Length: 70
Length: 233
Image 1 (cartoon, each protein chain N blue to C red):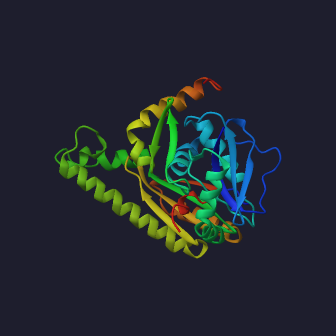
Image 2: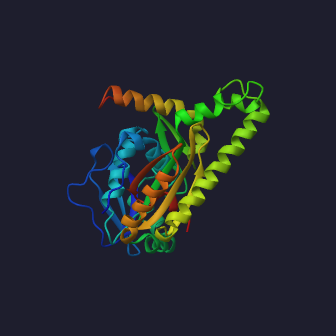
Image 3: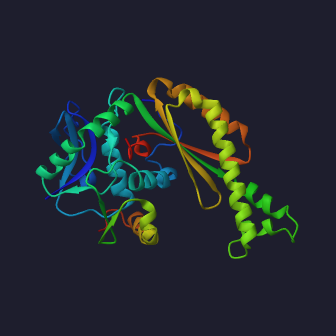
């Protein structure tokens, strides 16, 4: 399969990864439940959890600082 | 143990034995109506993080080959047991089959278009102090008029660039989506569904488009599972 310029795994593509995996893709179960900071959120699209975006950024930053940390 | 779902593929498509999903969990298969749901058994719901999102995407991507393109599922979909998962798979069989046919032999590519920082700054500094558009790039100083002018300008630029992309590469693009980016310096993201057989020609067209705009940055990504085309049909 032909690779393009920036792999979906690269740091540069993290925004695209978040946008696709959280906001797009098919919904099979009627609702999507994700956890952010240990709190379950039900959402139908990324726009509805924008108020939690800061929490998510902090969570991702935390993961980067401490790989494997809970 | 709950079932965390990743993607839907034709029944014959099986994950490799060593494939691991979110949290390192093994990837299992549930079949119904000629379809297969790839999932992992997990005791607790993993939080959203760069690692879990990457693991989800890696698992879905592992189902991609030149003949099969999975229906990628949005992250975070759970079933309490196989019975409920099988019912969901079977209940939507017509929809899943239609999407699998549409995606076969194709992959998604992404284009993120943004203005170069120097260009954005120059746009602002070249304006007279009285021009309300001068405040566009200084958050907190915008007037309503300047804000609306900036929105209109960004929208117009994104529309023109998207049209140029379509003109240059439309013959290699099976389907496309466009979404505006709300924050500077971003302008828009484009998603293209491209046949593997057209991928090289598509890449060449995108490089040509990049050369047409010295004041814009283009970030090309892919191939992706077709997330941007899976929430319909």
